[in-house]
Amino acid sequence: MNPAHVGRSYLLTGPQSLTQCDKVALIGEAIGTQLSFQELSPEQVRQAMLAQGLPEEIPDRLLGSLADYARQAGPSSDTVHQVLGRPALTFAQWAADHAAAFRN
Image (tube, rainbow, N blue to C red; front, side, top):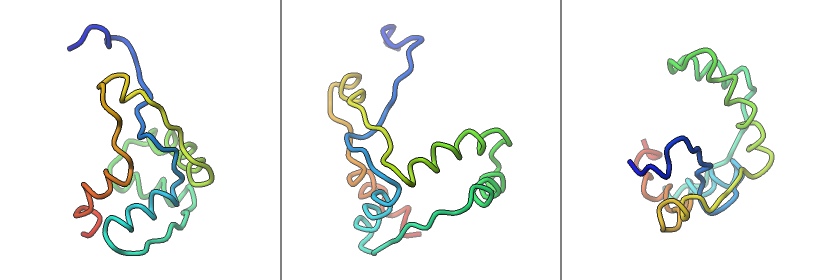
């Protein structure tokens, strides 16, 4: 462990600020299928998260930021480059690397 990182927290993102619609489109490109984004109600998302076994407090913490990202692009930072000394992967690269998971 590098002592320079002890007690610090970082905002780790890719290099682009993307909306949920942007991300869905990039996943579609990675799997060769046109996809669309349809926002669910917060209660539907909450129930799905609970059904997956998440503790009760987790959906409530996540729902606000997830709803915001559906309307506007999420944050981006250069922290990955600062910490690792290399650029962060783009979301498109991540989607291509994980395309098999989206095909199932």
